Length: 263
Ligand SMILES: O=C(O)CCC(=O)C(=O)O
Figure 1 (cartoon, rainbow, N blue to C red):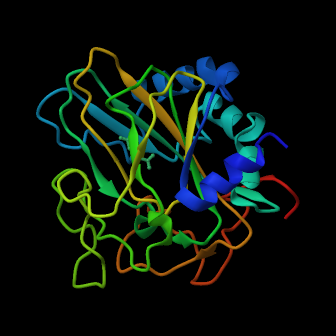
Figure 2 (figure 1 turned 90 degrees about the vertical axis):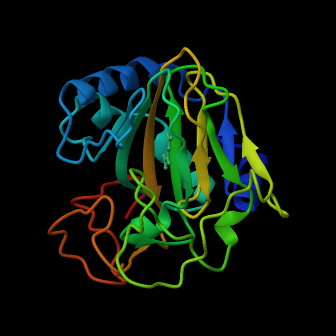
């Protein structure tokens, strides 16, 4: 085991934890992958319509960027994912690069990842790994929000408009800063080599990057034994065009490899 019982019970209770130094040997690999990705963005790359600074994001590049392939197949991410999800297996869903350059006031809106995705389950986790020291612009989480009954309205990061057309039974986007209610926000200063782990259903967001450091981060996303494909009211993000799966299927392992445990 790489994780302690406390890591696992904190994750199950709060929906987010921080791991210190677990990826120290992988920082160079991630930095190489992010540099390659920014030099040669994929078809889904976005600049998030910022008017000041730069907020670059891109996803689903792990097969064409060798450093990301190594992160998926050789780093401890898969084992850590299986342990924290309390799952026999960890199946890789996708990679996501998020770079907020210094002097970028744009916040990352509060959101859950789950409603954007074509997969759902009680066993899901993203590992968000910054390559630069991060304080104010770190990821922030609403503790326990992975257990909320209704999902939060997904929005476009560019303009906060509805991500899916039509009326749906979403709960409004929360704002724990102006309306804290009984919400507790978790956030940690991060050093390169640390990782923040969170359930796909945990509500999270980030402030802008007002400081002088870049904020380069790689998120690796995994699902466990119970995750199944779900129908959404429109094109998901990532879209995985032509995936050929239907509601209730497990993710197909030729697209989404099982990187820990036997299928
Ligand atoms: O890096 C950010 O600002 C947001 C990251 C995020 O939302 C994610 O990894 O799911």
